[in-house]
Length: 274
Image (cartoon, rainbow, N blue to C red; front, side, top):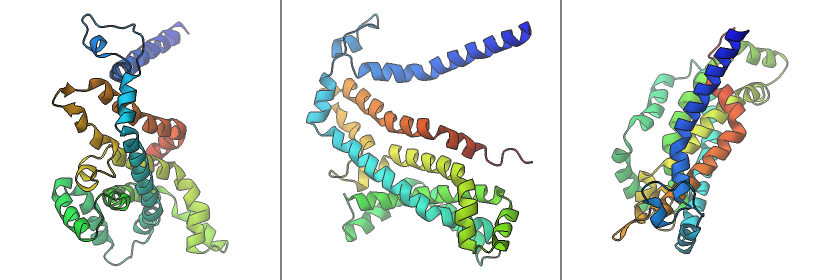
């Protein structure tokens, strides 16, 4: 009994220490958002201070809140399309083993993810310029869709393969069509995997910089693209940069917090076989 309590105490202590180590940079960044310029660079470090909101005023006056809205629209719309298109595609790759050119098509899908973005952004730019897609929500959503869709299909197809084929066969015996068996039987079982993969795709889109910088222009400027504009000839606006870091992490933290059960289940699907 004493040994068990000692082990539990050690584990709890190490967990708290690890959490503190991981969260300290986040706390430091968030504190800069509420410190004045003099308090940021004071030595010794100022731990107790009166919060100031002058940096938030600068961000609102210069329209940085629009960058947040743009990021939410583009990341959310591209992730929704990835789930809508990628889920049946992943199922097809996993179940239709006799599909003609199946392996070649799957390799082609993965190749879009393997190519460095810098190799694709110039063709994107030329095509977008021809079809007036530069500086539009649709253009960025399509660009994000291409590199996230391959990842989504690749990961979710492995989840589909882990589901017993007997479940689908039993549904077919009960009179379901293949589409009905997928929607009513397999889709609920795939929900954790879909959630986990969709969250990863949302994070990839949320943090993406190169496509947003070169294809987004001025109207559809996302939050990561707004960071370099805070490096001015007068110096770096550290307080405002900390606000972007703070605001940029909040949506992801909220999504992960509310979907953590599905994410954990999705990431561990197939890890233990009966």
